[in-house]
Image: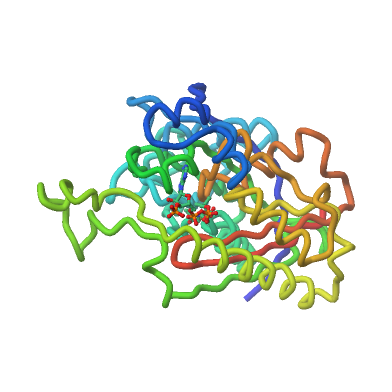
Length: 330
Ligand code: ACO
């Protein structure tokens, strides 16, 4: 089996226009701007309109990634979409996006559910498929409409989440050592109950009773998730660095999953890196789950935070619990 190196050819992102501030959240539940900012670092989040589904956000991000990469929809032979808020349980959001973007019918299209680690799972999958020699250009998207699964009466979760999408185009690297140089994935399946949407699946199909119990919404044990998040993200970062014989200080920019500024601060401290070395936009978007890293990656590139030859570390954790890290040499 041939193995080829893979590279990110372009990035794009999109967030809906509507901004929901902490003050707006405080009109719905008993909370305050000060509390939300102090505990999470979040100031505002974007909320999709009633007619906007996850695929609508995703195609905007994808179009920008096509423009940035110079790659056309007709060249794509693989579409991988990371999401926990698909347009429908069936068919995949990837197929809907394929059709809307005019990607050829010969392309393989599927969704990945690894929650907030989903984008890293998706790029790892796409890169492995391209490395195998069987695919050559992938559109990889992280997209979420989390506002559709948030309980707007639960003050412990509703202030954390937002909507958005980020996309990358991945192709064959012209040179070894440039591009996606490594990934590390893992899961802690014993902790599924910490972060879960209990209703709507085969365990608890949707019924009037399940809806009355609010089982269609995100349930989270915030404190436990927080502690595990810090531990697994630090480990995922250390493991990949060790695998590649690198020290933390050699990383030029870390793009962490944007869940909570306190989680990012803690990881910076454990890795003994200045927090300036971390890209942060959680203040403006909240947690957009699988969209969080690709939106941050696109903004970091377009803000000039990533230069040729530099090393970027992506690191995430999410429901599952899942975790993952990736190293990119630009
Ligand atoms: N406003 C005011 N008070 C609140 C709010 C709120 N929005 N939410 C909770 N409180 C109260 C609680 O009721 C509690 O009061 P009590 O002591 O009287 O019981 C008190 O504030 C402290 O609550 P904690 O939950 O202990 O607060 P904590 O400091 O842990 O912060 C938070 C809560 C921000 C949710 C934090 O636990 C967190 O960020 N956890 C990680 C969550 C996360 O990252 N989830 C995403 C995972 S990724 C994915 O896959 C989707």
